[in-house]
Length: 417
Image (cartoon, rainbow, N blue to C red):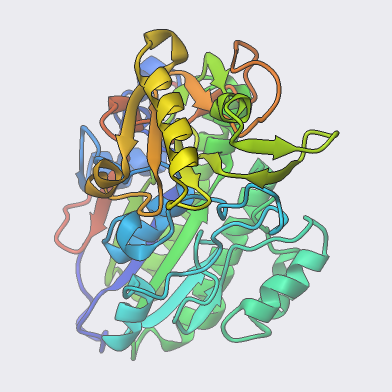
């Protein structure tokens, strides 16, 4: 790509796009998997820089911790977002997630702004409160039009999302992970490029982050190698092409594009519920409807990982009872647990600094929060999952670059073309 001499910006603009759960094999083994990704092939495989074996994900390999790690360059124990959902055994926070950008370390949105970039984002996880110029964050309440009012209220500047919606329709909140939701995410990113970034790009470069979720969701519902997941990824690839072409046009190719994923994914075979054992040990109390009313120890899931906390770390009796359960889980392969980490070991891996223990499951054994019923079930809640050990090759994330310094060659096309 050539830099246009008349462009007054010395620094190239940057487009960062996260494709949730995109595994390297879907980039490099398209023919074997029966998929066709012409945008990814043309820009990154043939003309860009790629990581053929992928990159090790953060611990845990779960969406929100990983996205805050990629936007800060730090691990979850440093930035503080250790799970998707807030630790909440009794449900007092009504299912709230860690929607917010951390307040402990600097984010790329903040750093870009400090270094002369116009800093923007659409639908990127963990972006509520991000210090940027134009931030349309991921947030939700109930999936209705009410979401738009809440998202607009926490957008930067306020009014941004309602302005956007006059052209693109309802902004996709985090509850809509469908193909249609991603279509709205793509429209939002294009709108940001055309209406907020194009007018200033001659004088000031931009940093824009964007996000697509449907491949991950289709895999959850139908399996990693399902036709539904492949079709979602092919649709994302087309939207990637639209975004990259528009960014190239408005920057006159003075641009760097980075496409990443947060983690990989693998198919499930079992559900396992450590809280069933904790309740049997007298560490959890429920009402007649099975709702947790009090707890001395509780296990909260992160896919193939779970954080186990003590309500009172000084409660020696509860700590002893919890230790006995953990020893039981680590002492038998039939329990589906690969590793039981103590607090120090979890910190060394980069996650869960408040945990008494962290459970890492065997491949295919998804951890759940259920308190009643069987500990282990072959009836799975989701057909595929992540959150498994960051050492598993199936959990490796994608990393791809295209931009100045590359040498664009004609696209050869997919085998199915």
